[in-house]
Amino acid sequence: MSELSFLEKLLDGVEVEWVALGGGVVEFQRGKRLVRSQLEESGKYAVFQNSMKPLGYYHESNVEAETAFIICAGAAGEIGYSKDQFWAADDVYFAVTPELVNSKYLYHFLLTQKAKIAGQVRRASIPRLSKSAIEKLELPIPCSDNSEKSLEIQSEIVRILDTFTELTAELTAELTAELSLRKKQYNHYRDQLLSFEEGEVEWKKLGELAENFDSKRKPITSGLRESGDIPYYGASGIVDYVKDYIFDGDFLLVSEDGANLLARNTPIAFSISGKTWVNNHAHVLKFDTYAKRRYVEYYLNSIDLIPYISGAAQPKLNKKNLESIPIPNPSPERREQIVAILDKFDTLTTSISEGLPREIELRQKQYEYYRDLLLSFPKPKEEAA
Image (cartoon, rainbow, N blue to C red):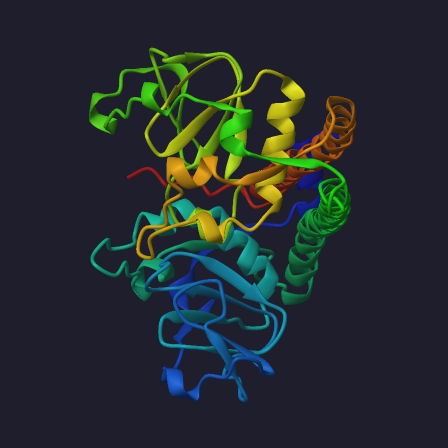
């Protein structure tokens, strides 16, 4: 069955009326302000203020369950839906729907209008959205003269679209759990493989294991960079792509400064290969073998580097401190074995990490495609003047 014939079968010949949201079909009410001292860290009812993330919790609710809402200040134009009761603060418009409108149907429809709603946001110091901008939107209501039939059609559309969103949620939960498990396994084996008994191996300072190429780094301000396809690296990875290069080969970069030295949200040591350009926010180290480079990379990312970091406002790992870090130095055979094992875990974890957003994006596109299809009811042709 074609997509068009499916929509026609769903409508079964009924007329579709397009009604302005401000025409009485839906009432948007503004929430009520709560001061921060009234909020709780945990509680029964989430409090939504100026974003999709709850500001806190409260012991009362002012909005019923199964309600669509729109943020009108801050993250103005963001559209949400809650299956539970919640508290809407004064930067939230929540929809009160009559018996003729399924509230989840309204939510899916509002998502099709997200770009149009965003275009009505007044961009000032605090972005704001007026209620009148929402009320001008026209909602398609199939079989408006028969509420039972209308709700039946709306419910079927909601059922189909919810199937896509539920599949996305299940996939996200499944892949997130898998990724968490693999990371725990990886960290466990990495820590075991990189831990040595006293006297088991010799220790060397990092400066003895690697050649430092910091003197060859060249920072380029963003306005002077010539666009190209050569990766331009900074403290935490690729910052830009440029036309020329200063390094060609395999190197280990180690963050020299930045908050990530303490936060460790991303690896502070990472390998690069081929033609590259590196600015002065990452140390550049050269090793004589692949195994030695990867081994040091794994080791640096596994240990606490705070004793080697200076500066409070701007954390810094200078060249002298970097090269003084003691590294356990096992035999080449054992080092290669450790790297081979950790490379396998790293490949698996990376594969899951990269696959997760791609899969979720695919599911989201499928949802958006069918959402737009199912809610693209034909509008009556305007009468000729």
